[in-house]
Image 1 (cartoon, rainbow, N blue to C red):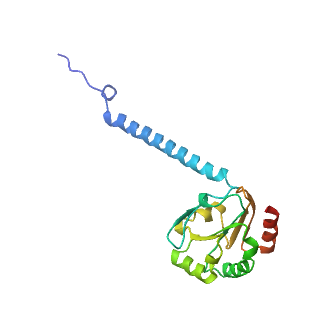
Image 2 (image 1 turned 60 degrees about the vertical axis):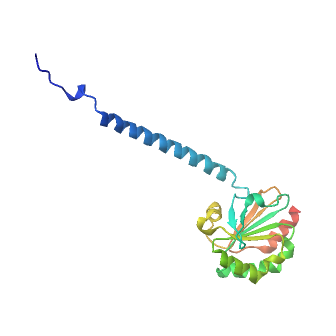
Image 3 (image 1 turned 90 degrees about the vertical axis):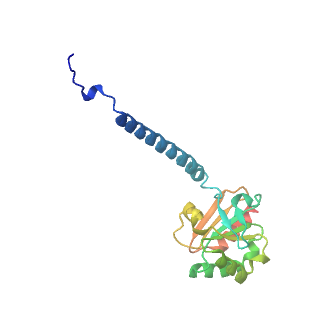
Length: 185
């Protein structure tokens, strides 16, 4: 019997086949992951002129979502930090004009812990204003990233349908906001 030489080309190499399969699976998983992220992010960015789908925790521990906002009236979203000097000055001025904003839903969002928000609510007596909702988004920074906020305070005014009218960072013209709000009502 004649001995034949087995060459590499003739032998099945399961490691190579399974190695290719791993690459195919990795590629498919990456493509699927990219597709899911793209679809989710396109929904958010497609709505960039709408109220963002935020979530925050109120000082009473309850979760508040953007979907809980009473639509049908203007919305003022304020992103701030009770520790920020500019924010403190703006908030003192804002609360002097709070009655001018009573026909709007006012959402005050921070990233600080709940205890800081509870102290803020106590200091400014926000419980006396039924149209004001205060909470923290924690360290998710969803709202901060959504608006690409670089300086605080930040305000965004929306009409009764949740369409963005105007937004301002740092130096907020409260009188202009009051006038725009009056035109929306």
